[in-house]
Length: 115
Image (cartoon, rainbow, N blue to C red; front, side, top):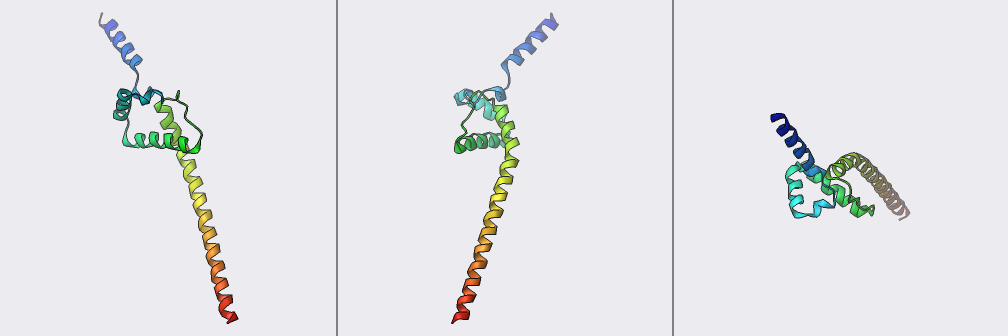
């Protein structure tokens, strides 16, 4: 009898699942949203928020069938690539700014010599 109760309890707990197994669509339900936030570390909360915001801002849209766990995993996989792209954009902007500064200095020197 004890084995049966243990097996039944294990099956029940497995069927309930984790809040991380809720879909993004389900995360809009207040009670489930509360459970999700309680289950997530601050780092994972940030990853989930970033994932949703980046998808919305990029126009890619959200797959509302995706689970919370999948969204966090996807964000953690995409974050380094976005960081590299941002670093490359920053380096390019800095190089362009430096080139413009040099051009301005050269122009100023030419104008001084012309006087």
